[in-house]
Every structure is written in structure tokens, then in C-alpha cells.
Length: 83
Image 1 (cartoon, rainbow, N blue to C red):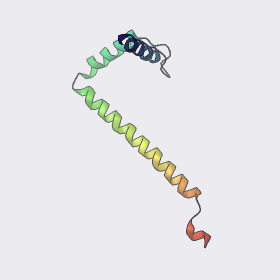
Image 2: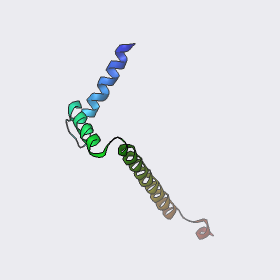
Image 3: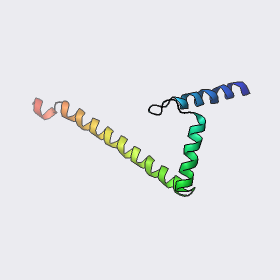
Image 4: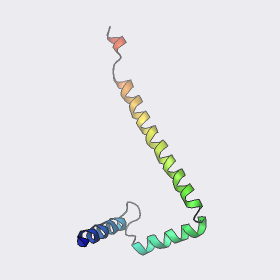
């Protein structure tokens, strides 16, 4: 039972190594970056930063969904124009 968990974690770590724009960054590099961020911002500021980042992503997704809805409404003919 423990083997599949270890394999799962190893696969996740391997996929972390090939993140989109980071190339072949390893676990040690990620750990160093995390420590630097912790030293720069402190433990209390990081949750606030992540909360703000999450809100920004949510607003972006909402904006994209709104843009798709507007473009669909513009391409569909109105019922009033058919009569």
C-alpha cells in the first residue's frame, strides 16, 4: 500500500521538474526559492499574498467567462430581428 503512495509522490516531483517556463528545475531549487520568499516576506505576509493572487486569478477567470458570454450573445441572432 505504501508503494503506490511513494510512486505517486515521485511522479508529482518529476512533473514539478518540468514546469512550463521553469525548465528542468529540481526539488532543491524549489526549496531554496521557497526559503528566500519566506525570508523576504515573513510567515504572516505569505498567506495574504496568496489570497490576493487567488482573487486575481478568480477575477481573471470571471472576466474571461464574461467575455465568452458577450461574444456568444453577439453572434446569436436576436428573436426580435426574425419577426
